[in-house]
Length: 79
Ligand code: SF4
Figure (cartoon, helix red, strand yellow):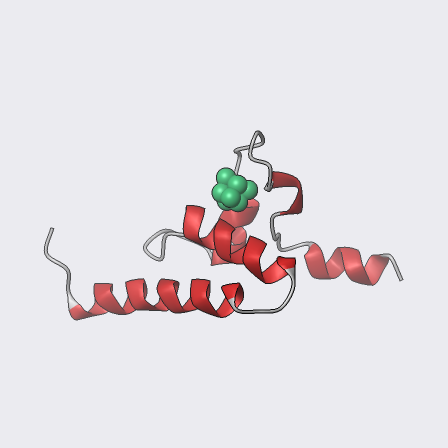
């Protein structure tokens, strides 16, 4: 498969996303980076967070703490 400039841009976006989350202080950024690295495909439908949310690898040790689209709502509901 020959990659176009457009394809390379999507791969670069993915790599930057992983690096940006990984360099954040604390574990949240590292967990997010790992999940993005594991499952996010920039050519598939949905944002990285939606793709991670849809992860069905329930045996993964990170599954319970993976980032989801409901994270913000849960935080607001609990206060
Ligand atoms: S929870 Fe899912 S996306 Fe995250 S590391 Fe585990 S298998 Fe990968």
